[in-house]
Length: 346
Ligand code: GDD
Image 1 (cartoon, rainbow, N blue to C red):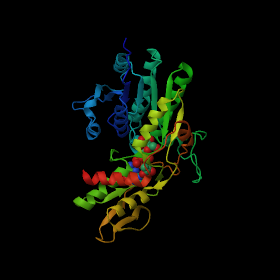
Image 2: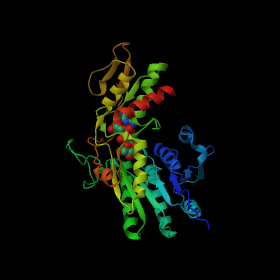
Image 3: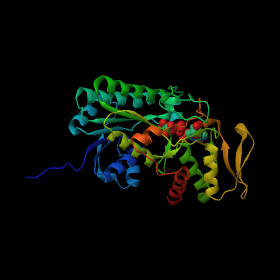
Image 4: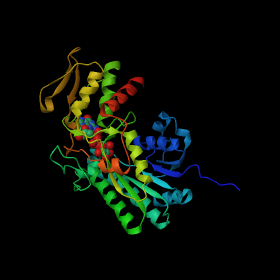
């Protein structure tokens, strides 16, 4: 007699070509999972991050708009996945102020769509992960010695954060009402060489490397005294996997617990590239010059200021560290260095 041992689990990832989707796919492929990735409809498939990680041909692609209920239900019923990770989102906070409709459509309707499908098709064995975010807390903690934990209230201050909070509550509703396995990871900022260049870390790295080696244009930034709790995306996708390994569904905060300002991030990158940065002036007139070449490296632009800003977004991940035995491998410095070195090599 033969014993058939399943060598992989069917896993569906939405937003598979995003920073987190790509690293998660890589992580799970190494663990022998079978990956299905949802890509937006369009003439050419957008899978450049999967190409970079050289995993593009290890994934089965499904073309679907996540807000189309019937198509999504068809795929889910066909695959009967063991896991669904919902990482697709309109994830740029600033853009959400300009286009709240689109932000809500993707960030809320897609979640409702998946959860409804799971409920209707009675796919109880399927575990669902929702990408929640630290943005949902807003400025709830004012004292910068304090870390944000699950007992804090949610006080979203952007259309993006409101849409994510809607979905966060929806997950809990489906978990409690229909007994679905639906968990969330409330992730604080996480960066990597795969980060999109509209986000501040990648924007700074890409621009300063271009200024250094290709005579690129001056960097324009918004509020450089804003600060964030920045971890590495590779460590954070590992926490998602661990969340899904738990017997019971739950919500977890994933964070580094350390705060760094945009100014500090900029200085580390500039110094690593052998510039001698010096800030001059104040407010909107502040600039940064390189003391060696006397060139202006950075100037402030009102355009990149937010209608509402977050000041103390620093998370307490002690429960995740204890219960999930999650431990990040990257330090802040190591992450920044990897981002710069990769940018130089490109
Ligand atoms: N993007 C950007 N561009 N941000 C700037 C700039 C600029 O030129 N100048 C200053 N900043 C400041 C922003 O005001 C913000 O305070 C901070 O840099 C970080 O901005 P982003 O990198 O755009 O990320 P985010 O914190 O708004 O959101 C990211 O993290 C969240 C997790 O907490 C996104 O990944 C979200 O999707 C995610 O939920």
